[in-house]
Length: 118
Image 1 (cartoon, one colour):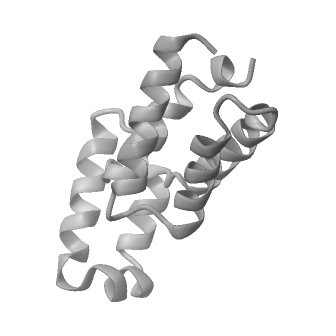
Image 2 (cartoon, rainbow, N blue to C red; image 1 turned 120 degrees about the vertical axis):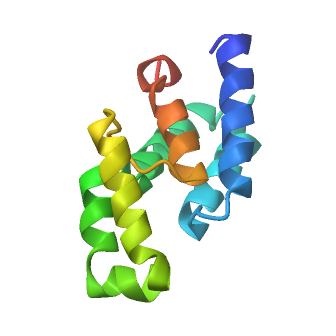
């Protein structure tokens, strides 16, 4: 992996780890990937990290459905209608995924998936 891509991915990974919206599983995969840089495990950890990002990033339609559901009401409380409206707005602008800090960092990393898996 070239240094520019590595530095970018490390930066986005740290943003992901520090995001309030990042799941504990994704944080663990991110940290394992960071710990593997420069080791014989880097390639396998990169694959595992990418798989975790793909599993956890929230597609925009899923976010809309969740925000409008009873479960979404429990998570977002009285803000659920605003979350759903925001999600619909960014979808109309072309967004494919949630734009929370964790999903935004994951999307930025996944844009380089093919380069990361070389």
